[in-house]
Amino acid sequence: MSQGEISESVRSFVAQNIESAELLETLLLVHSGGNRQWTPEEVARTIYTVPAGATRRLEQLVEMRLLSSTGGVNPSYRFAPATAALRAQVDELAAAYRADRVGVINLIYNRAADPLRSFSDAFKLRKD
Image (cartoon, rainbow, N blue to C red; front, top):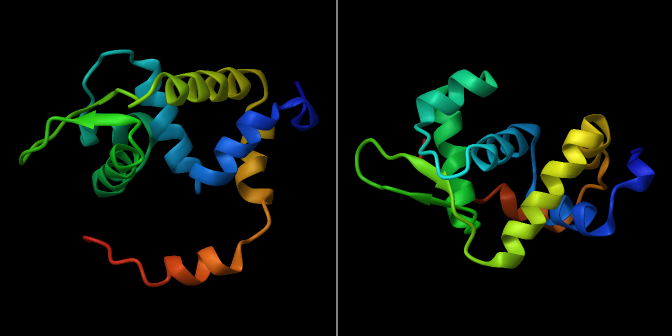
């Protein structure tokens, strides 16, 4: 599968939801675990990032309604899309990634910059 063969639905999902390879890797890792609960530390070790970064990405996926969180001081996360349509989109994304990893990653890095989104992202408040 080449980038040209990646479905329009995967292209659209990535364009609308996936801003970085780290977010993609986090989503696909938790997706691959089924009902497994993941801590930020486990995610960080597996995708080679820092726990704070993993926590940010996991919380971002919770906000996107793709994961659930136990909450509290030491939360854990699992793949729990809010709708069957979201589950199907992530399943399709995972299949596309398995078939053409470079093509999917290129979708993230080669997309045209959205000036309005870039401007609005500059004003997001972060809990760092």
